[in-house]
Image (cartoon, rainbow, N blue to C red):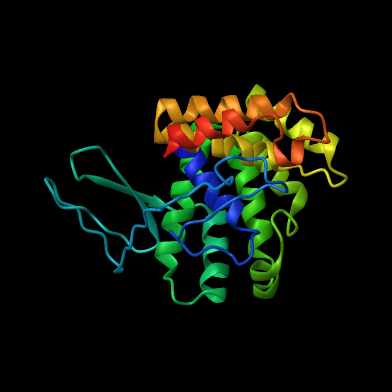
Length: 246
């Protein structure tokens, strides 16, 4: 699974019910029963817990820790580099631990920075700015709002801008989003991204699973609106999807 989609799952949880815990699993679901593997994208986050006022460094299998900084580990060496956290992640992390005090500030900052870095690496130009704008907006919300609002309702314009800038949606899922909006009275601006996340999650399971998921979505895209909600006519594709993905 492309790590950008794993981290976007965390972002999608920010406006969910309830707000996902740092490093917890989150899920994204559509409005219909047509998404095959239940439109669930599981995600596990890696948090870096750092303590202390002074920084120390070492070589070999040890790592360095610095208070209120983020750390990046280079493959196989155990070496880490620290740097100041982004203002947006700091602001959001402070709000997060205010609302969910069982987590530490460094845990929240580290997971936010991990998500931010991954999305910037794979997103379009402007992804970092879109990410920061969303997080600053979320940091200004109340705890009741953060824990009780539906996805995208807290900062909807910034949320959609971040998704469109940081996550590309392929042809199959663009068509699925169009079909969904055609067949339902409540267009969902996030359905294409939810579809793409599921598609990439399936591809991360295996090539066969990813291919079967894409074929199922493609079949759904060809249905008329009377059959689309229940996937009538795509039963064989759904069976193949279940077989391929286990």
